[in-house]
Image: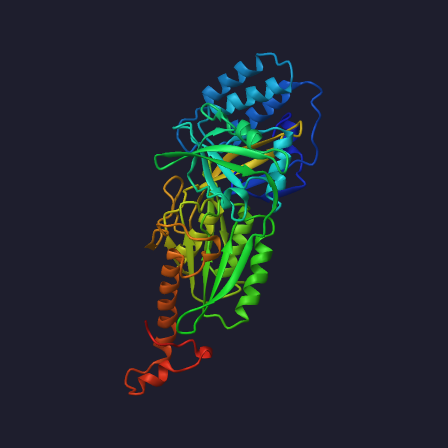
Length: 449
């Protein structure tokens, strides 16, 4: 919120048990059917990482040259490594030369934790982080709602200056994660930089079960029923939860939807595609482009669960999978976006199981919105720009008229509802205008405001 294959040539040729797309922003994960024990052959895992990067890495910065990468292999395999710690440090050092914050190595414990995180349950403080290669800053993508970080007021793009008084300058993301995570019930102190201010936050480490989708029905001043649906993270449960939510809400005579993706750092790529299909009946959802120019297109499947008017709330903490859904809805003209420009993570990581049970996330593709827009680093600009309340509101006030961005979204949704219904039902030649506006809720027609 963030944390989202060669042993030899023959290893690539072995079939895989499954191929999943997961992410903290479009992360695809391939699990090998078997993991080979290294038996102290530390160079094997180093070469395994090198081979994956050589074959699959997509360089979004334009600095990667295979000739230099070949020289790097010779340098790293020419050294001796006394233990796994030395080998793992060498791998991290090797990957740092790629200038890609999303391509990173995970030791077996970290790799297992990554899989737990995407299952809908995690242990920690509830944030997802990246390392900015240009500034060397440790940046929070977004806090996850309902977690200790969220309740303490941590925000997207906050910079972590120190962890328990250990400076984060020159600290890699793996070491930062190790310091932040710990035994349940203990605390970790973060030094935060935000908009010129420096302050400390003491956060409790907790085991957090994340309910991906929450919803409620709000009634407008004129009696329209508006379904407010919030997705906190695109984890393994999100698609099913959204399906159940839409079926329930659509049966309750609601007039339209406000889908809240604010501060949603991403999650499972396939979940974002499935959820997009629940709103979009036909059209392209997203396309991915590999380093070799191979393009894969994901389309709607004609099985949308609702066609009612839709507004999507986004902000600077809406990243990756959130941006896939937002881009699909905007480009297919299925609804409008309200809020602030999104985070801007348009790269796809593939996570591979290495020969010793450790893992590697490597950038293998970039994704494009249905109109072919590459949003990496630039983000998605909403149709209607609205800043959040200057004075913070309470968590229970999110998704109410006390929420400035929600209020703007509701106002825009009402306009769309009137347009869709008044054009069809109002006869401008009729003098009985008042009777039009006195119809009940079932007709979805109310007085203009």
